Amino acid sequence: MGMSVTLYQLDGCPFCEKVADRLDEVGVDYETIWVDAMHSDRNEVKRVSGQRGVPVLVDEDRGVTMSESDNIVEFVDRTYAAEA
Image (cartoon, rainbow, N blue to C red):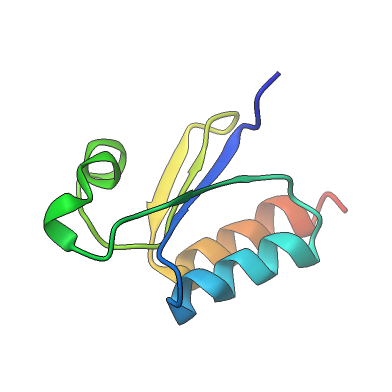
């Protein structure tokens, strides 16, 4: 079975790193999809989230797609840290 959590992130993006660090801290297995630095080339991010900004978290098991690092960290804390 594949991982149900995917994080779209850009190398060197502090907001992406904040989300990845939190996922690691609470022990969430996730797949990273590295996106292109050019906004215009982030078609996959736009396809899944409706916008081209990162980070974007997709949690297939819970039917959640979200952006904005603070919102994602809050979701991770509420959903996964509570289960740990």
